[in-house]
Length: 427
Image 1: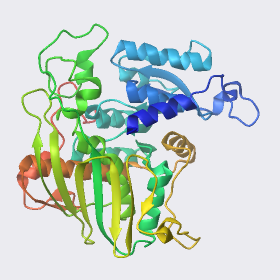
Image 2: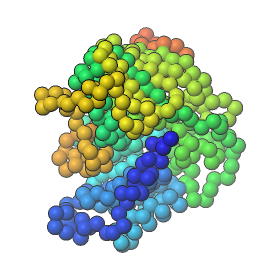
Image 3: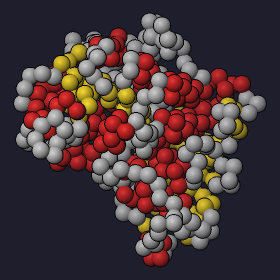
């Protein structure tokens, strides 16, 4: 199976240009340098470099001015990629993202850090007057509410960074369901990928000289360095992420919410069973079976396997098996259904998340995955983790955004304490 990340790496490599773009020279039909959107990159690891940065370097509307990473090797590599593309030595680099936020000549930032940094850096960026594209998800439900408040208050453009809404198969699914092609929606089946099988090595190790480990930890509690804690594997540790449910759930749950017309709301009930990593470093959920219920009667289930999604209605079903796999349906009629001008047409941008963000920086309109909808999808992920940790069914009020009659659950939705000097409070 071609994994999502492998697909993205191949697509980015195929799209990477080999010649200097005409846009840098201000050639006919391309914006001159004075009209480009100046972008700073915060986090240039595997996904930050291999997908986000390489995509930006293909877009004539953007000019990358600076890169930041706490890992000096990654930082230098990203700097060199930018300089090679632009055929100069102008790209700045730093291990402290605050230096990028302080630059008046940078219009927007692309944030590709571990999850525990997402909201804090995004809030600091919008307060500094930057538009933001940031990888998903938040670390806690109430973080998202703070992020929405700051983005709207300061009138910044914010793109929750996933490509799904520009992927034809997921856009088509959502439109078919929203236009009633499977009748009344009754059930959504979501399958997320399986996870690593080892529990992570907690043995303390010397910090590599190229890594600013204290900055990597940032607002998270102090913990001894081990190679299994940082970079890709942060996903399996609750101090930094929510495991597979937040990593992949944000993708497929968004398509589910989009098709269910609940992208600005959410379920009213969640329950599930599962087990957690033991005997090592990792502590997020390992095995799970989760069930959500919505006020409109739709039931959504989630389990591990081959990443897939299926919508079941009173008159048929539509879905796929495998990441970006071809569309399937219960009938040829559904597959070939045409949605006319009078139908529901969901906004997308075939050029992708990065191009859509830059377009909206110019127009000052919301991109296809704005802060409000990104928060709601992250919430769906967090609801599952909280239910699994508490081991009981939970009732959720999507309007008040709080658990009903359960203070223990409500305590788990709140912003976690941050290690000094980091804070979401405005100075």
